[in-house]
Length: 151
Length: 151
DNA sequence: TATTGTTATACTCTATAACTATA
DNA sequence: TATAGTTATAGAGTATAACAATA
Image 1 (spheres, rainbow over the protein chains, first blue to last red):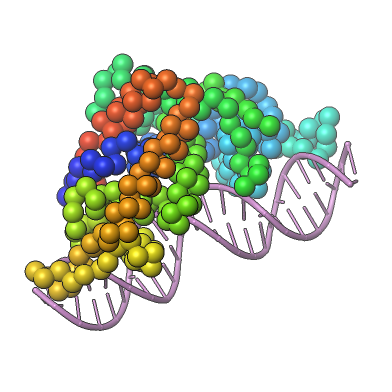
Image 2 (spheres, rainbow over the protein chains, first blue to last red):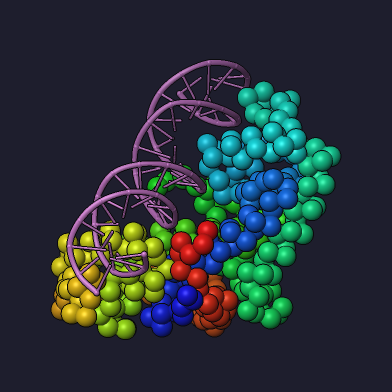
């Protein structure tokens, strides 16, 4: 039983963003099931693949995730053998997160699976419109304050 | 300590939508504090103002909210004297939600407060870009499946 | 004293199950 | 039997507080 968007909420960003976000999570999560990892874990692999090894806390900062929340994300990747926690030589308190060989393969595969899910999410738009909306959203988010920083 | 968007996540919709959604909720919630209502309650007032009285369940459907979740939303509006629960003549199981006079005033005021919060959220974009991204998001969401319908 | 990772805990949001009163 | 509203409950997701190891 589908329904149309209420006219009075056509411009309500919390509503549009929230509804689309939930749908995006559902689609991307399902797309990643063959890899046995979640959306945040794929994002972690992507950041690590693009920027090299970094500490857990730094990784959380890059993902917009609190340091207490990143623990479970990294735990799952480690259990799946996709990353390794190594001691940082410069600071033995910190864990340097390193992607394994099988982690690199998973990252490349997951990247494509997610990309397809993103096309599905925006299937009502043309290719140009998909690029346009993605670019505008990214530009709307120029500076990020890390979570937990003064709430 | 702000940070930039990771290059590898520039197109990741779950990430962009999720981050912006949380920021939208924060900004709109703060904007609505003078009214003492939340984002969902303002949305409920907007839909009721635009479409007239309807049952609770219908209201939830319009907002994309489960019938068990809409209860607390309507409770809050009723406690604030902004709506009244009246028995539907045609079906005495159902509550017809009717906006009060003070509810109509709150709706108009809240509408403006939220609109300003939305401009703030997209302050990195031009007016035209704001309209464009909002329009594209609304078009990306043409048909909605109500929550809880087969998950 | 401050910071990294960690755990325990709490809070928010939202859904499923089960109840009641009507239909 | 089925549906509207309601409550209790459970599951995500994410944060704060506190602790051990290290700086």
